[in-house]
Length: 279
Image (tube, rainbow, N blue to C red; front, side, top):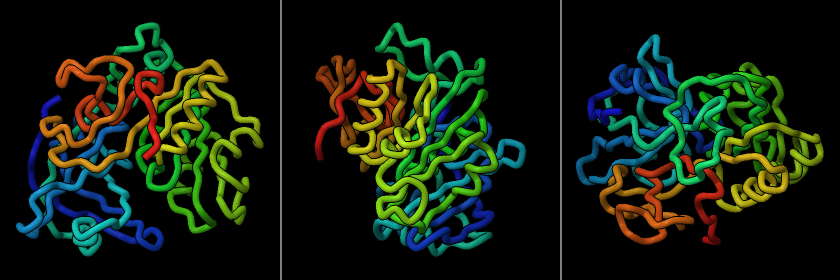
């Protein structure tokens, strides 16, 4: 899969909730190749900011040649993006990283060192998608492309949610957890899974590390595989700088240590292939 750097036109941009923004980009060169779980790097138009900002793909419209990005304003770069409007242009590099394996490819894991698949559609299984905070957007396109009875478990701090209606349109079941109990199960996503007796054959997850640790433990106790997408600050985004690494179960062929590059070897990993350490 070739990486492409090009100019993309902003088709639509809006604020979903305070500090959370959605942006549709017309970039057919990338959308035709992209699969759920991958990301793109956006370059600021301000030349003083050299490093790109990695943002996961939320939706892919291959027919129109568009991609949707949903992101949180976290600094000056994403603040610049939040001010963009339809007709503006931005430099994009992608698609980057690997995608979530679908269907049978997600549960055939006898070789635990194998990388996730290329996103090809497979036979039906019962997938459970688990997302927290800004780790929720990367799971929306996945929910659209998966077969079988799709369950989405999504967690927020409060009833100030986003993308819930979109998940309700594409998933067979949506369970919500809020830390303050204002909507759905009070607590985190694992509390919602237990309270609502959610079961499945494979887990896909994206979110903060403490949540991913809980997902990994739940998957191990249930005896099912979990594919997790790691969130990390990145510099180059293409695996050259070793600025975004996580601890791996085996030696990395690039660095000869027990590390994996999240931008290049990930961001999607089989949960048993990596260690989820305290920050």
